Length: 283
Image (cartoon, rainbow, N blue to C red; front, side, top):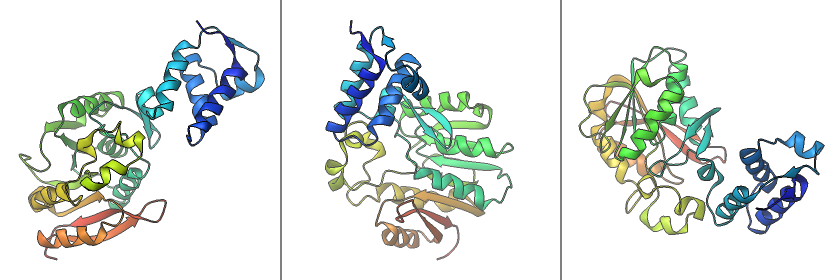
C-alpha cells in the first residue's frame, strides 16, 4: 500500500507525464486524481497536505498512460458534444473533428426533424445519438460490422434515452440495408495501409484496426458506401461523410464514378477539409 500527500502525488504525475511527452499533463493528472479519489482541482489547491490512503490503483493507471494508452481508454469513456460515451475494444475513440459532421447535419435541416437517418459504421453510436437527442421526432438505424461495437452503441443509446428510436443492424456498409433515408452519415476508416504504422501509438495500438484501415488508398470503405448511396438516399436526401486529410479530390472522383455529387465541403479546426456533403443525382 502506498500512502502519499495530495500535492506530492499530483506533482509526481505531472512530472512523469511531462517526461513522457504527454500533452496537457496537469489536466490529465487532475483527471486521474478525480477518477480515483473524487477530488477536484479546488481541493488540490485548498488541501495540498491531505493524505491519500492508497494510491496503488492510481499508480497502475498512470503506468498504463505512460505506456501510451489514452486516458479515455483507461477511463472507458469519451466526451463528445457534451455527452459521455462508453468505449469498447471494437469502437473508435470519438474525435472532436467528428463533431463538425453532427453540427453540419443539424444546420442542413434548419430545425426540421428528418424522418429517418442512417449511420454506417456507428462505433460508439455518438453521431446518431447526438442527432436523435436534437431531433425528437426522428428515427435512426445504426450499422456496424463488429457485434461488439453494436453492443456498446446500444448501451450508449440506452444511457442517453434514445434507444426507443435507434435500431441496430450488423452490416458491411450499405449491404443488406432496406429502405431509404433523409440523411446518411458516416465516419469510415480512411487511413491508407501504408499510414497505419506511422500513426501515434495512442491510436495505432488502442483503436480497432477495422476503424482505421481504409485499404491500399484509404478509399475502400467509400467505394462500398458510394455504390449503395443512390439506393439508400431519398431523392432529396443528404449524406455527410468525414474524410482524411488530402482526400478531397479522390473523394470527388469516386463520387463521380457512382453518379452522386459533392455539394459542399467543410474544414476542421486546423483548416483541413474534413467533411463532405453529398446528394443524389447526376454529377
